[in-house]
Image 1: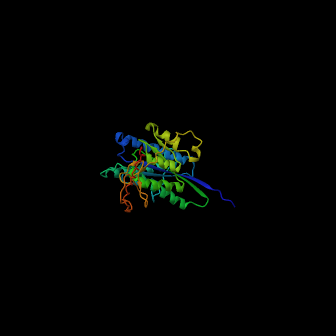
Image 2 (image 1 turned 135 degrees about the horizontal axis):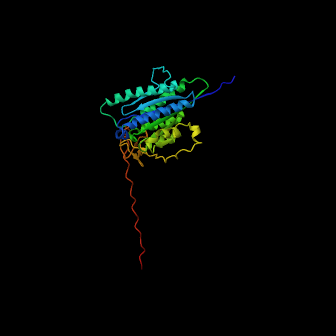
Image 3 (image 1 turned 90 degrees about the vertical axis):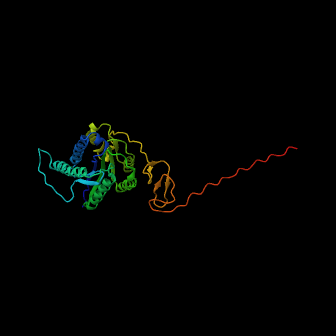
Length: 293
């Protein structure tokens, strides 16, 4: 007796809701526009197949929190204005939970300008790993993570990022990134390592169109579509002392920490190193000239 394999597609969306993002500080309604576009994008993913799964995580300067599904909470929603019940459930749950998150964040002082995207990525990978353990025999789960952010690139999270990128690669999880403001070097590496798409939105007014065009299709279908050309990835590493991208540096032979200048003590694992000995200078031999008789 043969069993039919059930394939499911899981989309984990990470939305950066930090109110101190530059684009949000310039125009507050941009955050509302992003939320609207992300909700439509999420429901479009669910509409592609009844077996598709969805998860939404909000991240900011204080941490990350699940918006959908809410842990240990099941809500029954009736059909509203002819809308599919699951779409209504996603929209209401995301809006209500996100409102509580933003209210708690605004009341917190001081606000951190650096969004903890690495924490949200870790949370998404843990959720994917749990679903992998709970899947029934004959079920195959295709998982991917989609990040929407307007924050700057953060070299202070470099080690967390690298651990997450290679963990996702080992788990077969694809990372997609949509930048709303500027180029993100480290997250470009994530897309290149895991085989995902990276796009900096040219115009925020067309955010939803870009989401549905570039990021909604499954990775198997993307090869047949005409998508924006991939960007040239900058694979420079960030030093552990100043958190800046460097071309040449010193690497600890024990823990592989990177430093822009030589230090006799590794600040990460506290290993002692000998100072490099000066290079001996060889004396040039004097030329001897034959005496002229």
